[in-house]
Picture 1 (cartoon, rainbow, N blue to C red):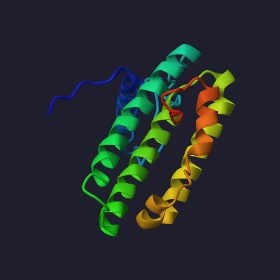
Picture 2: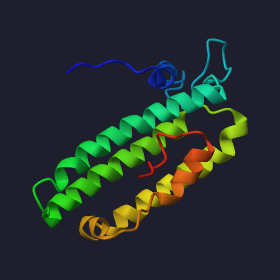
Picture 3: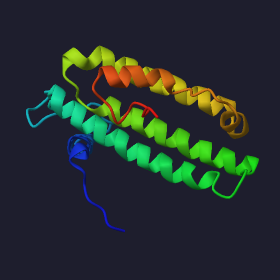
Length: 173
């Protein structure tokens, strides 16, 4: 399998590495009690980790890339689903489970981006709407979800467009 490390994952990888290094410093005190707070190289000073804040343009570019990737993955799930006629209820549920997992993953990845403070309110609203839509779709179950004309994610489109996340908004036509 060919694996590249996308640029948008670099901050997350660095944060994970920093956390692992910090957590590996946690150990036992001299009295044998476990230490629960990571400390820095300065004795007793708490370790702080900061993720660089993205510019608006960087945030938009990275979030659009995440959405484009998810859109392609969802297309890979949905494309074959109805290709050979009406799918079984089990196939519909499996497809919905995959879409729900992809949607949750997208929400987590967008939420993990360090957007500039002026976008935080809008990004939080988008992630909340995405999570609500995902919960709604999951609660419907596969058969009902694929029988309905309602799109639980429709409300996220306007929020995504407002942020300049065209790859996250449903395409017209």
